[in-house]
Every structure is written in structure tokens, then in C-alpha cells.
Length: 452
RNA sequence: GUCCCCAUCGUCUAGUCUGGCCUAGGACGCCGGGUUUUCAUCCCGGUAACAGGGGUUCGAAUCCCCUUGGGGACGCCA
Image (tube, rainbow, N blue to C red; front, side):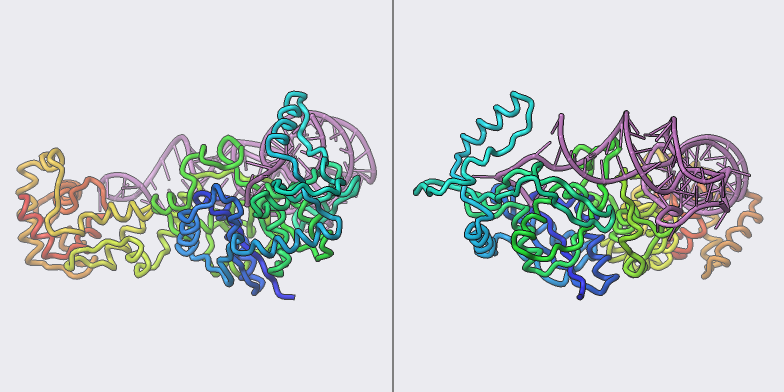
């Protein structure tokens, strides 16, 4: 049987790290097993689902490079299907209409809270036969009494829970929309899902879904509940923990592969390897190497992973991501090669490249004033010398630079420091030979002339 | 409160299934040192963990039990 997995986000907010990680796991699993990934949008919450969120999911997934084989399929387009299955369950006596009003339920909940007990629906309508007309109702699942509900989790082994811990949960809301547990199960059946890989927070929902599978006499997919990602305070990752959406990491200069690499490695491992290419991950990913315990998100390591990938990214891809244009005189290849070497993220590269974007550069006044008259004279001399030498390669640049130093009995610092300021407008930059190499003789001369 | 899951350095993890090769390995961070023309790079070194208690066994980080700790779920949210 060929593998079919799904990624099923709800369009109710921005794409979180945790959610994206399960998307990645599903994606990698489908690739590894030559299966299909279905993108399913769980928009059964009319209040909270938004189109913006839907669009954000699509665009962020695309940006990450996580493509799917089928979908996006919206659950809101499939209401008739859930309705059909709910009716079937009712007709078989496995579900029932409940006419208890919202107020009535709320009262019961308050009472339970007061008594410090957990609320449980008292099955008011479970065995009633009358059907009040003109009254709203929900459909509830008739949870069996005292029955062991069992399923296998490929990471955690056999899990079982007694059904007495499960409420007569709602499967169809009064507006006709299905609830999560119901829609999710029906779709997994209808879409032929073979493996469900999702967050551990769904572990306690699973028995309800198993109940539905069993009631419908359908095969249960193989579940894999992946451990949670926790914040520094070791609670479930949420808005509290600062920048949480993929969008914000994109804005901070993270690469898609860095996000995929770091998130995959958070809860999964392949021996001691830390840095992976996407193709490697598709080849290596297995459920077996997943970790059962929760993982704390660590921005420091994330940054390190990103900087590792930054150093490896091909220049052709890098320039696209930077979305900047450099003046034609500079050697783009060289500029990117030198600068990515010592950068941690895309934004740093963009900053470091500022001196290549315009002919004239703006130098901060204090910085410019820090270059003394004597130094300016040295620079002017150097400019003439350099113009005559017109070196072509880094080696030649080095040679002529040193030759000038010897000729004037100068130390490296005495020339490199002011030259860096004049050429880049900054105290920090790649090595001075590299700067010279990037800019080319013409611009070097130009800039020295401009300021000295 | 009830139910479920989990437990190796501060953090991510290898090792656990298939006990001995583990005086527990790697990585991030941190601390120290080095290279260099600046730095946001690079190189070298160091720091630091099997939660506790009982078993089983010749032998346990690895298997079993208990305790403790942590997380998650208990919605007409997903």
C-alpha cells in the first residue's frame, strides 16, 4: 500500500514553529517513502478561520519549499460528507442529537467548576427518543461504557485508555459544521491516509478518533505523535516566547533550509550530524530516529545552523534572496563569496553589502573625522600607486599593497584602517584585500579621491 | 482534580529496543587560548549529564517497579 500522509493546519493564525515542524516531518516522511502529502485546511471554526491565515499558510509553505501533492482541501467545502457520516452513526444508534442549550451546558460547567470536578456531559439526550422541532441541536457520539480504547503509536507503542474517561463528545456543531475530532477522522478515512504524524498535544484526542474509526468499521491509520517544542520556560511554545511565526524568522534573515534543518533536528537525529541538505533529509528521515521527549527551542543553536547554511548557499540563490542590486563595477561573485563567509544571516549580508550598492557611499561624520590628515595623504599616495599597479588578482593586490607598505615604511594597520573606512564607510568589513578585490581599481580610486 | 505521555551536560542530542566496547560521544552556548588589517569568521583547549530509590543480573544510562519531576489533554478550538 502506498503511503499517504497529510498536513492539516487550521487557518486561525500565523504558522508556528511547532506546526511547521509537523509539516516538515510529514513532508520528509512522504518523500522518503515515495508517498503523497495532502494539504488539508481544517477550517471548521467559522469564527476564527480567516482567509489571510489561509494565504499565509500557502505562501509560507511555498517559501519553505514544502510542496504537497494534493490539495489544499478545505473542510468547509465538505460539510455534506461529514453530515452523511453523522447521519449514518445516528441511524446505527452510535450517535445522537442533543438539544441541550448552550446556557444549560454552561450552567453545568460552572457547577462542576465550583465543585472542583471536571465537567462531563450528563448524557441528558443520549437515550431520549423525542425530537423537539424548531430547536437547535448538536450531534454527540455515544461513547461506550467502560471499554478499553486501544491504538498503536509507532513511537510510543501501545496506548490504551478506558472509555469512561471520554465524554459523549460533540461531532457536529449546531451550525452543521463538524468538530475537529470528527472531521479529522472522516477525512483521514476518505482521503486514505495511512500515517498520521502530528504533535503530541493530539495524543489525548486520538482515543476519540479511534472510537469513530471503530464505529465506522474502518482501519485505523498508523499514528506517530511527535514530541512538543517547548519554550525556554519549558511550556508549550506560544506567542509568549517572542517571534514565533515562520514569517518573522524569514524577516530575521533565516534561510528555508536552516529552518527545516533546525526544526527537523529538534526531536530527530542521525547520529552526530548537525547540518543537512534537504536532499539528505529526504533520504535519511525515519520515524525510528525520532525522540520521544519534548525539546526546548534554542535560538542560539538555530542561529548557528543558519550561519552554517549561509556559508554553503550558492551565490546564484543568495543573490535572489537578497533582492538587492549592486553597482555594475563590483564583482558580485566575489562580494557574495567573501561576505557570506563571515555572516550569520541574510540581513547581515545585506548590511555588509551596503558599500557595493551605490557609487558614492555615505560615511558617518565621526568616522570620517577619525581619519587624520596624515592618513588621507597616505591614502592619496596609495591611490596613485594602486592605479599604476592596477592589480587583477587577490595575489597581485596583496603584493602591490605590501610593496606600498615597504616603500613608505608603513605598518599594515596604518594603511588598512583608514582605507577600510574610506572604502566601506564602516570599521568592520571583510579583509581589506578582499574589499579591494570586490570593488576593483576604478572604484577604489574614485572613493579615495572623493574623501581625501 | 482526572487521564495520557516523557525523563542523559544549561540547551539539542548519540548511546536504550538487541544489557558489557560508556572512567558516557558530538553540537550549540559559555570560559580560556591562538591566527589576522577591523569584525560579525576560522582554529585549538576547557566546562558540564545518565532525576532518586528499590529490584533483575557476574555486569544496568540501557530491563522491571515505585517515587519525584516535567509536559500535554480534558471546549459547539484545532
